[in-house]
Image (cartoon, rainbow over the protein chains, first blue to last red):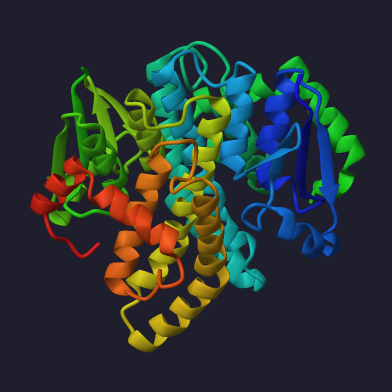
Length: 211
Length: 202
């Protein structure tokens, strides 16, 4: 087994490294979960390939870009999809989440609370509601309880991480009331033994993440 | 060979990378292009209300980079093992970041505002990343990963050829990126495609 070292900020809330942590945890693979304070960043930045984190060290070689890291780990540990087409579909869903992360970053970083509230409302209405409807349709069509094929892939973990970890915490689950298949998927992933083990460990070890 | 049908607007945008990959690989595909005015009727038929969408024997795939990666992998342009493919993905993601961050800059019509946005974009994003790409090309014999052109190199070509059409001086200090662009554009299939490709603003 290679030595994996995942590097990311201590906070805010989990961010773009969590998907990789979920993939490794679900696959039962050990990794060093390095979290550094923001004041340490100026010293770390120059040694990253593109001046960003997360980065993943694999036996000392470095990989950057959150979805690239997640996809690599998913492929190495049986969570990427059974064939090229399934892998492409899983990629598609992961890219959807990447777009949603970028979209929510805009209101998330707004300092004015009144403006921020407005921006979040617009985001929920214009971005989340249509996307949830579209994913619900695909889940119904696929009819296996998973986004891709008939097994768990990193796509399901990506949707769980985003919808449960961030949106549900921030907005409650009212936005899922018309999406029983998506809600069922999120609940299913939440209860997977290795995911549960990870989230319980994580929530008790890094309480500052729960903001 | 599966039947490929690529749906996008009649401009380069987020579909051009996949079009270039198909042409580079010499693989036939239906290059469906529609006008902006047709989009409202077409939107509902796309799985996530977005394009590009690639139909493979009628099955739809969306997300430009999922599409590009799939087509590249099917036709030997993705990297030869998991690690190389991850390296290729990483450089492709870098180009994607350029496109996402650059879009509001290139779309700004007010020339004064655009100048300010462009300066910030160049300083914060473009120049630091270009130096990394330039260094990697110099270190790796003219391509980003492995021994041959991969879709990351084609993504570089697609993005930087657009950039230098607007700002010709951007690559003045990047001889290796310049050489890569020439290498891709002089490929027989690409040359042929460029001769007949619709001329569009983006």
